[in-house]
Every structure is written in structure tokens, then in C-alpha cells.
Image 1 (cartoon, helix red, strand yellow):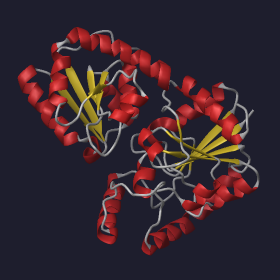
Image 2 (tube, helix red, strand yellow):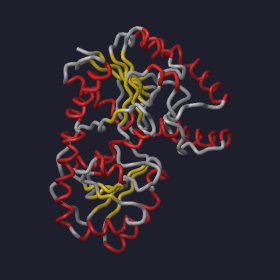
Image 3 (cartoon, rainbow, N blue to C red):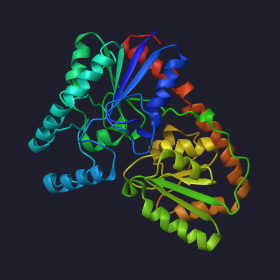
Length: 361
């Protein structure tokens, strides 16, 4: 039996819960530590409740302002480098050192209380240790433990890898295809999800309903999506549901009322994420922007590929061909179960364990 620990600022889109289930059904022991609660209400395991960090809108806004004023850059701006490397200004390092000084007693207490030094494999989500100098990870590495860094997008694109973590990582993972072209030693995994927890919808709504959810309008291209769907409400009598910064339970409730889900049409990200997986699992047709690289990587995909220029045209085609829409809903569910159900994804993770960590499942 392996003992596996995930360390992450938050249980982003609930992914840590799926990894925990996946490891446990294979007879392994798994826990996850998070720094703070998610605003969307995903479950926690070992919750530290650290101060001076959050997913709240006030905290995110203050970070954006500080980045513009102090650094002269937008937080969502991509960094150069292969891989991009975290190299913050002195003022930011000092702020983090001060924050970690306040955090240290809570972190050390949790390490003792939950025996966090007694695991075999350590997954550092976002490539982050408790401390930016990777003090905990270095200590575990020195004891012969296996170190995994898992990157999810903005952590590498906009922040860069943490040099101290990069130096000791035994395995680097991602669910984001574009990151494979930003790092010389990164392995891909499909994002895990509990697809079988949902029953596929059996019929189309009247009126036909289109849904879009976002926590970041710029990255998703939400303003264009909203404008197009408002036009279609008038011209084709559809219903449009727009969801922004809502608790996860509410998001799912609203998605279930839809027939078509629009993920993103922006140029700042590739492909699809957890929002799409939820939609496909429910049995919705998912519209998103896939570039040529992504199309080649998943040639059997069920997505409707759209961008800001042809979104309206693609949606009208679905609206006016309801038999095609219903067929795509069925195919979408079959595809997401094959590639993304956590019971299947963990099998590939264990292959990486054997190859790069030298440990069996």
C-alpha cells in the first residue's frame, strides 16, 4: 500500500477529491492538505485555514492591482522561458516571507498532528510547497520520498516554476496540453472526474437552453459569448443561462437545465477544463475553442470547435438540427467516460509512478 499526500492552496474544482477516491479504490492511503476553503464550496480534507490568502474576489482584485502598479504587468500575461521561472521582485519576496512567518506555527502543527512526514509520494499542486523555498519538500526529498509537481495552467503560464521545487521534482504532471510546450519534462494526464455519478439527460428542453459559466471573463471570452447568446434569444427563441462566481452546487443545478454548454472562446487558453467535463457528463453538447494542436491530440473528441468569429454560426447549426444535437449529447457522454472518469485516469498515473518514481500502485 502506498501512502500519497496532495498539498495544494485549494481544492480547485474539486479535483483533489477525485484523486483521493481514485487512490483509495486501488487500496492506497491518500490525504490532501489545502491552505484555504474554496469559494465554490468544494470539500476539504486537512484544511489549514491560513490567513492572508484566499480565493475571494477582494483578494484577487488586490493582486491584480498590485501587479499592475508594482510590476507593470497583468496577472494573466504569459511569461517567456522554457520553462517560465518564478522570479518576483524583492518587495513580493519580502511579503511572502512575512506571510510564511505567520503561517509557520499552523503548518508545523498540522505536520505533527497528521503525520505529514509519513507518506511515500508527495504531490505538490501548482508546483507549490507550504513555503516558497520548498523547505518541506526538500526535507522529504532528503528522506527518500518521491516528489511530484502538478501544474494546472496559470501557475506555469503567469507565475513560472519555483526553482527550488523544479530542482527536486521526480515527476512533473499537467492536464493542460499547452504546458507541454512550455516545459521540457512534463507528462500529460486527462483531468479526472466522477463521470458515472451523473445520468445522461434523455431529452431536449423547450425552449432549447444554452449555458455559460465563468470566474474570469477575459480568459473565457465571456463578453462575446453573452452578446451572441442574447442575440439568439431574440432571433431563435433560445434560453440563455449565465453563471458567474457561484457555489459549485448552484453551478451544477443550472447546468442541468441546459442542452448546450459554452466553455471558452478566448485566445488566452487552450481547449477545455472541469466545466466542460461536468457538462459532458450530464449529457450536454460542449462548445469550446480548440486549436490545431488540440484537435490533433484528441482527434476523437465530441466538442463543437468555435471561436469569437464563428460562435453564432456554430450555435445556430446546433439549434436548427436537433437530431444532430441529440446524437452529439450521447457521443459526448461516452467520450468523457472513456477518457476522464477517475477510475480510468488513475491507471495512467500509476504507470508514471512505476516509470519515473520506481514505485508500484
